[in-house]
Image 1 (cartoon, rainbow, N blue to C red):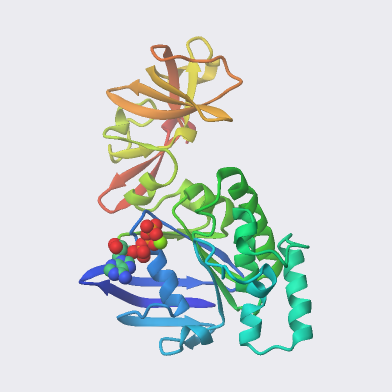
Image 2: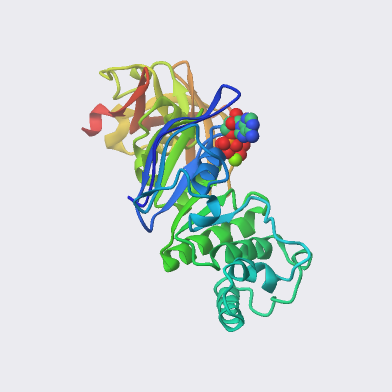
Length: 346
Ligand SMILES: Nc1ncnc2c1ncn2[C@@H]1O[C@H](COP(=O)(O)OP(=O)(O)OP(=O)(O)O)[C@@H](O)[C@H]1O
Ligand SMILES: [Mg+2]
């Protein structure tokens, strides 16, 4: 394991911002820390960076306990949320900053900065100042500055938070591609699940200073291990009695989260023959257009469910009667979850 946190605790005025954290990250992975505001993501990142000191527990980087190693000697590059570029320095000097501190010779620095300007698609902008750049360009300068000294570990705290939606999407793809090309172990913080799912090899879900689940994006979406994750991921709805729906009469628990991906909706008469015995009647309550699809709220069996529907299918409106079936759900029992499959599919 390249980075390890072992039983790490950090409290602020008796509030546990990191509550017995155990985490292991393999070399070369791109890992997202995902969780709601205040769940301890930044605290974990800052402790790894040596910007904050844990109360107890060990932090290990590349096999060495770094508890007493100052941040500047941990071989880490850090990208902060709001660029944090040096305003009075050019792009070139910002990127060269860490190399100057390392006292590299001028020729090496020039070559390295040119290489990074090219890597970050900023060729020709070396002489500009940060206020002469767009938000996306500034964040790429921050990235170039962080990786200039060839860190062993790259930490990024909400690197795209201040950037508008379209640029943010492009930057995500760029970051994923660039990091995999560099092969540097990276941990980035986000509270945006879509971002974590698209970018990360592995997601660490945080909640109230604890880790709820670690897994690939597919594992987290398909098999959320705790009620918190089941509710936090996706756009699922909670039902109090899944047994009321066709195909779930034998479910061992009633309380469940149903994700809209697993609710299949048909307008009356639209369902094909073999599915008929699976169908539940429902009534559309709300319809919202989400770009590539419609999101529906459907009232059925005394509950309300979210569902998706292709925007190529015949449109539905509030008040319309529909039929639907649920293919799977995530049952919740105390602190655990269990996958529930529709009987008719097993
Ligand atoms: N310097 C501090 N002094 C006191 N409490 C702090 C300090 N830093 C963080 N906290 C508290 O620790 C908890 C975790 O904070 P942290 O910044 O790690 O959350 P986060 O998951 O990064 O949230 P966000 O998504 O809002 O950035 C919060 O309740 C916060 O109020
Ligand atoms: Mg934070």
